[in-house]
Image (cartoon, rainbow, N blue to C red; front, side):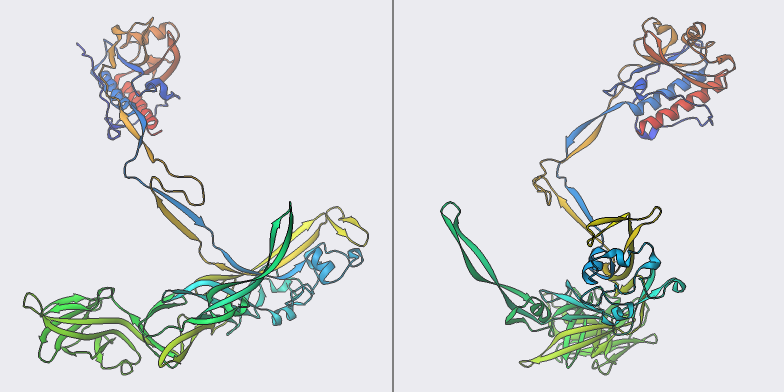
Length: 623
């Protein structure tokens, strides 16, 4: 049988591992990638088929050549065009406030308790020895647990948590008289802080005030300025420096400021604002109440006769059946597309809002919010009727949805009461502040604070081998196996979630918080190396004294004369006459070149070995 040379084609990754499908258990030795391919991506190997080879050996050689094509490439760096870089900063949850409620250490022993000779009272060496009077009483760590609990009332201001118009407003949080509930009550006698405990906050003891009245206020401080130069003398001049800020009454008081003027009187009708993270559009403000709802992005909407439109952001569909130009009326039907509930025919008169409420599978209509029970799913108002430029009759209808009157007390979330305060100024009602208070006992560790913060308790204990006794001016060392301990207990208010800040930067942009500028954006591209010369050879074409490259020999000593040469010279160590299919790697086998033998006792076993080598090459291609 005459066997022709086979040229291997460089192929894409889609051809990797393409085989006839023999199952292979052949183990392939560790063959370096450089055996198969040069650093420039061109072949570094010849595949050799014996002149006496069976057709199946030729097919195996062809498959190996195809698999080898997946390695024939190089890479180069190119500048990306119209590209950008996305950078991300992950900021862990912030601790907004932390209060130390128990502290037993050198400072509290010597300063708070006035103990100069520590050895006279002894330093605790175990949790059970921690004293009972190192709880914080508001001024010093000299209280017991009961005194601490009754005295603990701490304020903290969380800036920029809500919005009113163009202004950001703060949360003023007060936490009072929390109780510690040990998770192992049998081991806690209310002396030292419990190692693990839940916090218990009674109703009304967690308070959040949001003040929407903002002032321009001044803060005057005294500043000393040094005039002159040391070479000829200096003098100090004391000046009063006044700075101006915008804030609420709590901030003015906290900063010792003086109110200059009121810059934002509160939230009035027509404004958008947030309270405890919930957004509202204010329709009306009354005596300690306000009516709010949502306005769709497209408002008002124009309808022709017979036209149906969905109110943006809702499931409500409005269909206009008829329009009366003379009486400025429109005949409509309103339907909830989600539930299928709808009205009968409803007449809209110009300037007269109609309130829609879905009840028991029906959509009822009312002429006022109070008649609707202070709450409406949808409000429609006919603004006008007119003839369009195409002579079609058009009705202009405005919409509001999720309408509700809130106050004097409402419930923004389960377990919380919100109290509304308003004021009448120059004939206009304004929302001045809203206070949120827990109306149920809060218990846990952490305690959820309105879905935004965690209120947590933590106990920390540390051990040391010595302490300093100021009475003797010497260190006192602990006995072997003991340590002197310090102990702390904390309550902290922490964000539930951190922040993820992403930015897109292009060439010329400066990297934030650094002096670096992006001058170029580069990527690596793959450059295929097509095979232009045959890499499959007959055994009689190989010069054993100088093969010119690494060799992959397909077939054993019976089929392949080069394999036979390696066996006869004891260079190959495999018993190919009885091989179930093996891959042998022989470094520097012929004139310094490496050789891989792919063979078996039969043509089918050679096929199994070839498939194993193909899979090995496929794995190399992934690197």
